[in-house]
Image 1 (tube, helix red, strand yellow):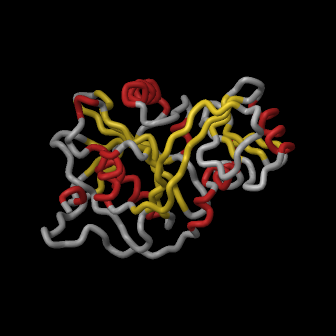
Image 2: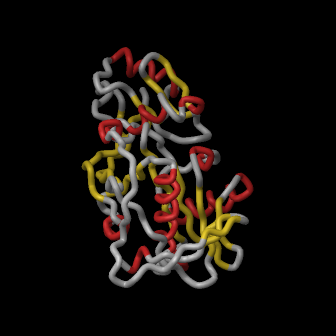
Length: 265
């Protein structure tokens, strides 16, 4: 597949060389490891009670990310009125509870303020990506705190989804610069056991069509697999271009999901 030919990339000051694949070589090569897909039924809750517990605020079974990091909250699959009341106390009156793909609905007095149909896609077990080609002169760089203003500006221009001033601290974020300007990025967000979500995949309008998104996603997927975890991601059903890209790279749909937000009375 053209999207996943190997190529030299640079991450900060470290260079990783990759031999070119033959034209007939398959895109995937075997890797070892196994991940339980059941934890992906509640990726927010599993992250907040696990790898991201240090970023969480909780009350009873209700949990939410601290506001500088992410917008998401979670309750148990059998949440009752008392548990929703705990979440309301955590978030505060009038705030929006971003419930991601919550399996249970809140009390009727909670106003639904948005709903979005999407998919949860996973990287196949026992596969590994090659790095795709990208435009000459473009380098993949690891992004850090000093890059946050540019990251926020790119998010504002491209609207890939929720991104807060400290979202980059949830995991590794990679970017591509052209003439010293950040034109594309992607990073790691949710971390349920055995998995890492690839998120905030976005490219400036003037830099699209050059393979940047594919290169960043493949680079992140390789890093996740190196930790013996598996990559997964979420994408809006209406984003047909992104769906086609992720399928070409090897991701497969695991579940249809509905993202919802509710205003707390």
